[in-house]
Length: 628
Image 1: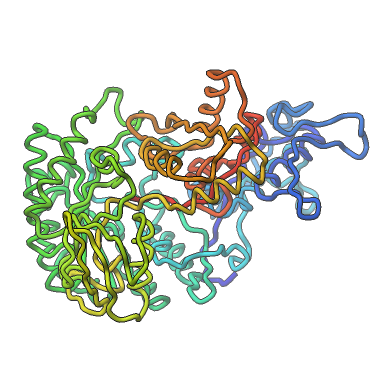
Image 2 (image 1 turned 60 degrees about the vertical axis):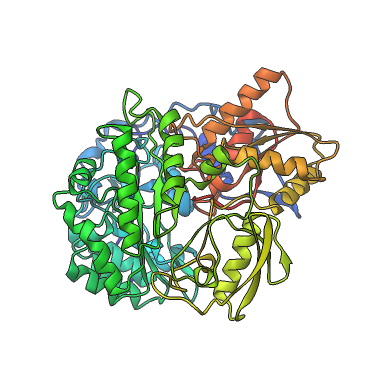
């Protein structure tokens, strides 16, 4: 570790502070094995083994269960002050204050080996005291030695570093995520000195290695304001020296002064997602508690003049009435389009059970009314307007799902200049027959990254089919090849890949299962059922689809990617009680466990716990996270 490196430190809960510690040698061994089974799978040759217990070589007559109360486990309460020694009086290093510790939940998702170290230290400290020169030493944490040993595989997206800059916020939005976040996921405000944050982020930049595709473990993301950090532009300048990849920055726009915009322009390629929410200063001030709402509103023409592409984000939230909200949504979208926004993203409002003791919004009417209004706005707005999540609009308005329908075209993009229009349905690209939306998106992405020259695109427009030639190199602002996507074509969400069904069939056949329970989400289920009905992969298979309730978040949160292990366990247990039968196999999309590469949910819990608790074989179906 370089002397310049920030010290990554993690707390250890001493005996008596936590129930995690072991209370006997056998229990300590069990804790070690359980921790290991959360980061590895035992094998015999190529065969994966399921382990739920162990025997000590000294006593093979006793099977110690791993997933029930361990024999002799006392919750780690005994041992505090053993033999009359009060370890709490031992001095700690001046730098070893609790405020300096890193949040272990990030490690659990992206580098659970750090959590493994924590658990083992806690287990050992429940049985022994550490000494230095014959005297007991109080240990309340540990630090990483050589940071190069803790790098993780990475796409080396600059966002992995940028998200760590968002440690504070200069607005207080009525719909802020933090106001409804479960306690374990709430993002704490600044509780460190700016100098310490500076040291950490510069260390992350130092170890950010695009060539090796490695970086220090990323974080959970941030709803705070990146540009509110006093060193934000210094960080971005240092990061630009490491990578030429685009910087995509989510901002509330309050720091987008003329001077800051000029500095951002020097760091191109840069793309901004501006949470504008209203083009009315008064309404933006009430929604966001922004002391100077005009700064963000006036930034749009300044960004256009600086050649920085941007999208505008609006969260429709009724203050006076729903009608007033929808009128303002239209004015804001038209204003964004008039200033060459690449698109307007309308994020349907959500709330968890932690947000308010009462229902803050009647979404059964608000969401459909918002979708209807957006479809009107598209007819007179100068840029594409999309609903987030996109699949909700499809769920509400399209009998046929997964269709490669164009709902918008970015101004001056290759698709726009070639004459593609909203309402067109893509039927073929470069001679390839297009059957669904993900296929169209994938091929357009390849064409955007490649150097293939003009390509032929066959589209259905109304009752006729026409052919259009799109030149990927023909474009102008606000489109940019480095920060744009799909040659400027905007779709109604990601859609569902047909290859998922093939993988599902392979998983079922490999298990020899006949009665299969598949756990989906409210939005994906209609698409999935349509694809199952069109497929020939599942003859003779009793395939049942269930939708778990998101009890972890509660409220109106129903996105499948936000489900956690406990939600899946509850759903499977309820299904078994309801039907009186147990499936041969449960299949769950991998997307709720895609944050890291270790199969952890948002709480840091491993998906393997689902099978351990319900006693039914569980497999993950590999699939991408649906962000839109």
